[in-house]
Amino acid sequence: RKGPVKLRKSRLENAIDSGNQAFA
Picture 1 (spheres, rainbow, N blue to C red):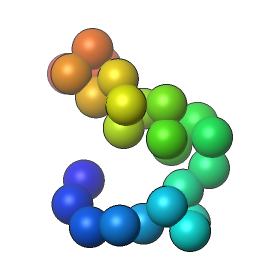
Picture 2 (cartoon, rainbow, N blue to C red):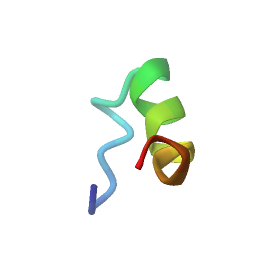
Picture 3 (cartoon, helix red, strand yellow):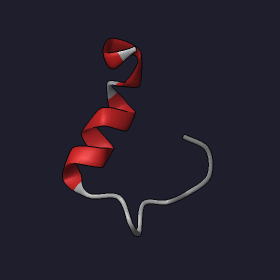
Picture 4 (cartoon, rainbow, N blue to C red):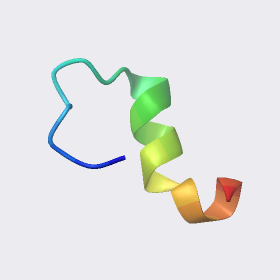
């Protein structure tokens, strides 16, 4: 995902973004 969407990001979304490589 590109762009700062932290305002709409939930904790789960943040975790997925952080571990994007792991989920990829």
